[in-house]
View (cartoon, rainbow, N blue to C red):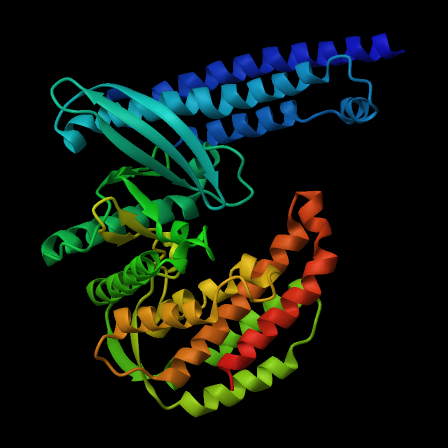
Length: 447
């Protein structure tokens, strides 16, 4: 009986392999057609998308094969897994890299001032909302350049071809490229030697990608991964806080350079609707009612409703993981998501709550980071951003509480939807702890 199953599986694999080889060849042909005469034909996106869906259907594990693998009959399950990996490699990597090299070669003269000899893809990283490729470009008459290729993705996307046919992601990539180019220009024009920005070469619609120069740097969040031991030395602690302060100053410069800044009253932007939306999404995920928090937010809002507030283009994701430090101690920020404008305090609040709402802080009952460090961190953010400007502390507290609601929801989703069964199983233990933790933090800001 087992031999019959093995033979059936082998036939299946052989057919899948042949079908995918044909589809791969068709992909390659379409890729070449896209670049005839130095132009591409958007109409081929739909064809490529259809082929992609066909490949996905063909590479799905038949139910009987899945059952065979799970039953412990492991004569050759590794062969099957390797074939699946080969299929994905064939479709997702080989063809995309061919397309990538063709695109970069066409742009080489304009971007780099020289024709490239070759482009070597060194590594691939899949992040939650992007694919990242690290590429080395070798030239005839200049030194090698290291590039970063960033392709935005929805969290459900499994390969780098899928974003190409998404109008939303194409728009996102194009907007980010333009924005980062503006930031680079602003930093260069500012004459401030403490600031850094990433050089953008361009947006490539054929790849739905942003091409940028790779620089030697590390994330500011790396400074706290060794906490609480690493910052106990005075020098290390001071260095971290200085970097935080300069990162906040970078945000201030960013707001002034990219926003249509104006001062209005908070009542004009109707932020209770934002609060209600955030609470509603949290309730959907947690299954709990949070009317007590609604009342607290309403009382806090009533106290600041008539206060003036700066409206500007928002970064929308300003936290330690998006601030970088170069080897010569320059500070920069990436991953801006300027899709909205709003109160500048919203970006500041996102950074202010970053340290004391990290998952390690939650799991340690709020004890992982020293209270003195948390206080100094917040002071560094406020001093770096506001400097000698007046700070409306009640308004800042309101936005901190709102950011914590959002982080609470993300935390609930992390433990509830995680594919790892161990992490998912921790939900029973973590959820009550998480809810008390976030509720206490929010209450402190809404007093």
